Every structure is written in C-alpha cells, then in structure tokens.
Image 1 (cartoon, rainbow, N blue to C red):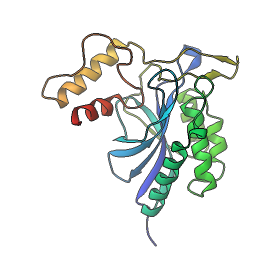
Image 2 (cartoon, rainbow, N blue to C red):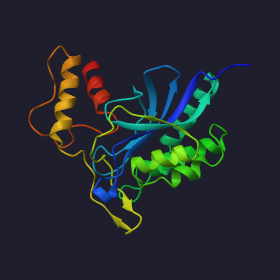
Image 3 (cartoon, rainbow, N blue to C red):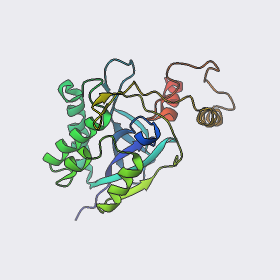
Length: 230
C-alpha cells in the first residue's frame, strides 16, 4: 500500500489575542512534501488597505514569525496535487474572498477547509472546527487543536507580538476594528535585519526609514528573499 508523501496544515502567525489589544492572527493553508523545508502557501492578504487578494506562493514551512501549525492531513502525491488545485480554484474565485472590513484571512481559511472537507481531502468536521477558531488567539487555537487530538507543531517564533495586515469584525462587539498593520517592534525589526544580513553577505536591503508596511506577518523573511531573487 502506498504511503503518504505530503502533508497539509494550517499555519498561524502572530499572537492574535484581542484581550491584549492584538489584531487577529494571520492564517494560511500549507501544502508540502514530507521532510521539505518549504511549502506551497495558500492565503489571502490586503496589500493596499482596500481589498483582500489571493496570494499563493512558495515559502518556508516554518518561517521566523510562525506561531505554530496544525496538521490536517497526510496525503499521497496525487492527493496533494488535487488539494493544491482545489485551493487555487477556490482562491481564484473572488466570491470566496471576504469583503474587506467584514471578514479576514481566517474566514477564508475556514471556507477553504470546508471545501476540502467536501472534496474528501480532510476529515469530516474540519470546516466547522476552523470556523469556530475565527478571531481566537493563536494559543487558544493551539489548545483546541490538541484537545481535539490534532497534531500541533510550535513555530520558531513563540514570542512574537504584532498585528497582521487585516481588517476584521470583532464578533463580540460587532464593530469593525482599524486595519491591523505590523507593529513597529524594534526587537522584531532588529532580528529580521540580522536574518537578512546573514543571508546577504552582511548587507541588508532594508531601508533605515520606517515604511508603511515593513513586513507581512505571513512571511516577511521569504518575501524579502523573493525580492532579491527577482
């Protein structure tokens, strides 16, 4: 019998604790080959403060701001290709992308997981599970994953505090919160500059002048590396 060669997980970035004033954690769905350090990330983001866009891309499976990931399925090669194709079609359909200021990346992930559940890629009940995780803190998501018997893998950045690039609705107070942008965290910026310098022979391409969006919570390290390779 053929053994699974790929995996599918939900990757969570940022603390996302509303009680502490955080914006919601950023979330995406990763499809990857077992043992690989990279993945195909499927997620949405808002680069212009106006609308969300579907932004699939290859990136490190565990990048510097990953809070953790919850494993959803082990897949055969053919199943991983099917999952990636289904996610691509789901993301390319603009009717599946939440209205800016009403939903966020977490709503999109929950909808995409529901679609994968319907297709038989992930277990029954996964769509509802992740719908119930919307706007919870990453620590609460971790605890719920473990309580449900799912596999949770902590990310390398367990202490990051910041806001992803998303507007969202606080469902408890039914109000729209301001656009969440990555906090101007000097410790975080210093760490990222150090990481980028170590990859570029001691030189960093980060401008010393603060900019509107210095990094995306979803994968700042890979984003900067991709720019250098263009």
